[in-house]
Length: 253
Image (cartoon, rainbow, N blue to C red; front, top):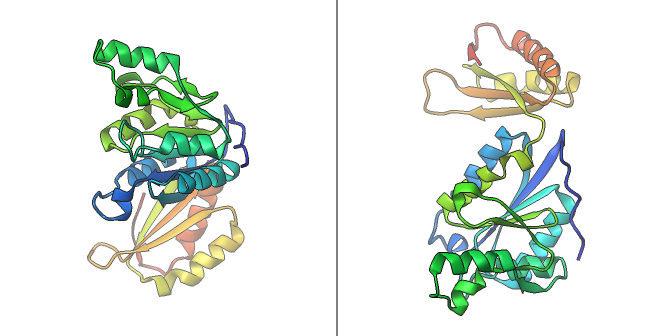
């Protein structure tokens, strides 16, 4: 299977995929909150989340998605399937994606033995298993280090741990920031659609979003304009603001 892209230490543009692992998510037993948290935080870091895939606790499914995403995106995060039980197979799935063996990492084993102080069993030692050649990223207050294989970072599915571990990777993932301006308009989408199209023709690199709201007396459509080039964004913002129907702009941000 293909090997992932090399990391970029000071990337202006960086893409990411999130692989959520768990039958509990696909069956509706658990509501996934990690995707929303990751999307919000990655955007704040200047990282474009391009793909979210949810796969079952099956080795082939995990390996296939990990390999697919690693070959196409700069960063891949996995969520879930990390633990001591029978259905925690993400480590083995990621190892299979890169044609690697699963081995016991001496540093993780040391940390486990230090924590449990003699009460060590095979289930606990499973937590020390990593794909061969994996590196460990310090996780500060999030407990054990985060396992990384090529451009794939293996995170737990428990939201509190996922969030803490993702935040510990902040400086490693950070890219050039996105800049955003917002226009709230009282006109409906059909009234502003032509103006949005014209704006994109003039500013083709602009990321332009249109979000109607049905239960607000304040505005009917929220328009978001984003770019990593602040001057470009401001020119596009001024152009669109002036082109919208008179009297329809409720406020801007």
